[in-house]
Structure formats: C-alpha cells, structure tokens
View 1 (cartoon, rainbow, N blue to C red):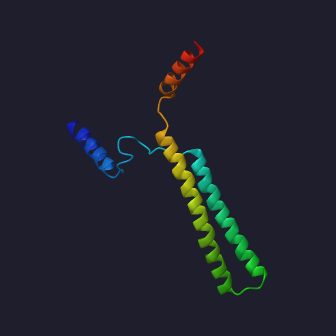
View 2: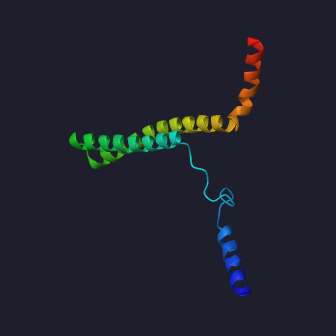
Length: 121
C-alpha cells in the first residue's frame, strides 16, 4: 500500500516539474480580457482577408506568380506591422489599466463618500 502512494506522489511531482512557473500551483494561467482577444482575432482575420483580396485581384489583373507573391508578401508585412502595433498598444493599455485598478472598489470609494458627506453637511 505504501508503494502505491509513493509512486503516485512521485508521478505527481514529475508532472508538476513540467509546468511553467506561472501556472505552477494555480492550475491554468489567467485568460486575457475579452477585449484583447477580440482585437487579436479581428487583426488576424483582417490580415488574412486583405491578403487574399490582394492575391485575388493580382491574379485577375494578370500578374505573374512572382508578382503575386511579392504583392502578397509586401501586403502581409505592411498591414501585419500596423495591426501588430495596434494590438500591442491596445493590450498594453488594457493590461496596465487592469494592473493599476484597485482590487477592492469599496475601499477606494470610501474616502470619496466621506468627503462628499462632509461637503453636504
């Protein structure tokens, strides 16, 4: 009986060694806010659709395969870098706002409420 519990604890410790430090002891890492997920999804979808549009219109105009490839590559690099910058700015501002927001809003509004009561009285 002791051997079975020892082997189970050994297996659990081996499985815990493979976890990242962020998820160790916490289960799953915290998900990103919905707004950031939406921005990432929208950026990826827009990039794919615009690239397909560039390739399709280039094909219809009779461009060679090398020209189509180069146009698609330049489009992906240009639009991808703009969308990356936009996503970076949005996620950075959302996460910094979330980090600076007080964890207990009742404590942060208590001095405000006390100050308003003094002004009214």
